[in-house]
Length: 213
Image 1 (cartoon, rainbow, N blue to C red):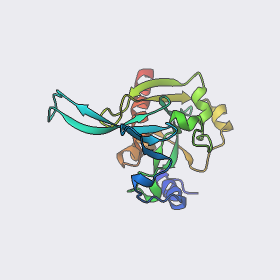
Image 2: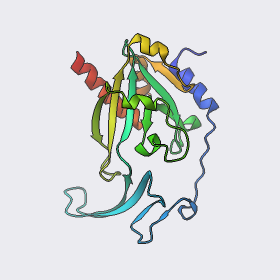
Image 3: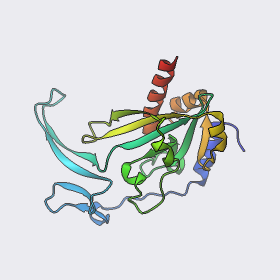
Image 4: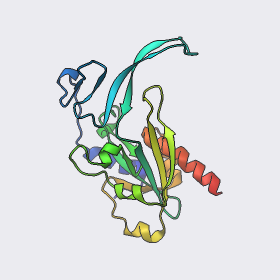
């Protein structure tokens, strides 16, 4: 097994099987336009939808414009990092359909990142890995707004959970999970190998380390 995180990530990307092809929005069942034309989303109104907004009187580059925004449905998403007794962090290699510039569609991600709908298994599939840790009362949660230029009133919950050595020993890691030292995480951050959720969590982690002294 390769020791460096870069070699490990390359291995994960090499076995990733996700492929993506563009498809017409007209034939994207169960997604579609609402009858009144006010939103584009799933017919069961789960996960998220796109809405149109008109902006007026903005003290910005222009004073007004039209644009679509994403509105996530069902509640805040959960972004969670597990932290070992030596401040090492448990990361995942995660493939997403929008990662078209990454080999295997894959970047480094937090231990858990999931929408409320995924946690509830609204897709009819499996629960996200490590989801049980999201209900641990020891998690240090911070609720932060998502990018208001793309999302409509949505928040993420960013969480840190410190585990002791015994708890770490009991963990059964998924094949796409690996413990990273803080130095390795910093390298990955500077290499541009962290997805957006991990970059958010990186700020939460450093604030926690600073406040804990």
